[in-house]
Amino acid sequence: LSERLSGILDKLTGRGALSEADVNEAMREVRRALIEADVALPVVRSFTDKVRSRAVGADVVKSITPGQMVIKIVHDQLVEMLGSDADPIDINAPAPVAIMMVGLQGSGKTTTTAKIARRLTMRDKRKVLMASLDTRRPAAQEQLKVLGEQNSVDTLPIVAGQGPVEIARRAIQAARLGGYDVVMLDTAGRIHIDESLMLEMAEVKAATNPHEILLVADSLTGQDAVNLATSFDERVGITGIVLTRMDGDGRGGAALSMRAVTGKPVKLIGTGEKSDALEDFHPRRIADRILGMGDIVSLVEKAAEAIDAEKAAKMAAKLQKGNFDLEDLADQLKQMEKLGGMSGMMSMLPGISKFKKQMDAANIDERMFKRQIAIIQSMTPVERRKPDILKASRKKRIASGSGVDVAEVNKLLKMHRQMADVMKMMGKNKGMLGKMMGAL
Ligand code: GDP
Ligand code: MG
Image (cartoon, rainbow, N blue to C red; front, side, top):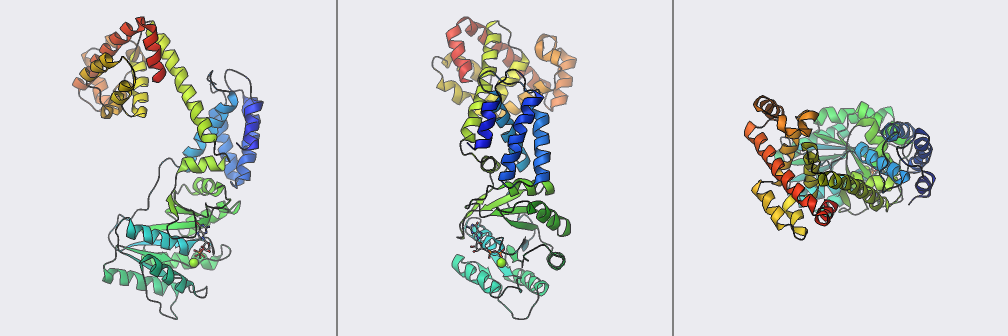
């Protein structure tokens, strides 16, 4: 655990809701941790503002400390801002699909061009042509040619004396004639962002109409990340980001900076010099790395489990009193959806086969969870607490609100009634219920 954040764990010891003072104290440490991880200042500021508004007043569940709670909120917010799902390269367009690689000199454009071409060729069975438009650096075109030979990917024959736009046009033409699926355009960089680079990129783009324009950036890029990403996005228009050298010491704060200022997804990360060192971007992993703690994952997961356990305990208490309403059912459905289905889970519990049969009889099936949750969400709070008031007209409204037939609403209500009965019966057997709710 990074020292800064472990400080938060010790400092915050109060109970109940997180106070503004607690959160402000914690945010000072979070800010430092993010700056150390190379997150750009304006992004740090907007990030901590978001966390602050989410954290102040949040209930601290009994089983975890306020410090753990804050760290969980920080981690969740980070994952959310980094983008929640892996976002692959899109080659869904008429062939030949042009992918243009842009970025500063030495960021890893040529290496990444070959990595992506290799992946598209070997894994996705696409026919790929690579072309180097780098006429500035001596031997840049040869570098790509060698990489092509090593990875069995074709490269556009080198013709001396041509400029970048001319080469780009020739590449598209050759890809068309040669029946290639994808043509990768590896452009020249500059040491700094300058006007000539931006003009050149805009010209190449206009001549080739690329389907993807990927900004390649070193994961060690610090405060420059904002300027870098905004310039390329405003002047050229990028569709995604590739973060290179993630095998090094870089903490990857640039991912957060660039994503935050452009809204464009980080699609891939480079993890080595070899052509197979390319990985999909996983927001969760980068979030752990930015926070500087491998063990944050387990900590956060423990915290999340604790939150669920507390919910489960509350629910068990409620059930013992014999009131299991539709609100509770919705909670259960969400949990089950998360756990990957009820039957698997039920079969893990001893002495539950009878209950499982009830469930099967009620026709509970994973794929229905989402729809069932939607039905409950279309009800008013009163309806959820007192399903008895649901007569024909209300049911009709709920059905149309959630996009199902009235029959399905009826089925859900019947299932709820059956579950409530079973729960009541089991509530009398406290040991068993406790065990079951604990497992949920
Ligand atoms: P370009 O100027 O943007 O085309 O950059 P290059 O592709 O020529 O890469 C510059 C240097 O960075 C080369 O020595 C590469 O081997 C190295 N490089 C590129 N990507 C990675 C990476 O993900 N990890 C490591 N360790 N080195 C990389
Ligand atoms: Mg290059």
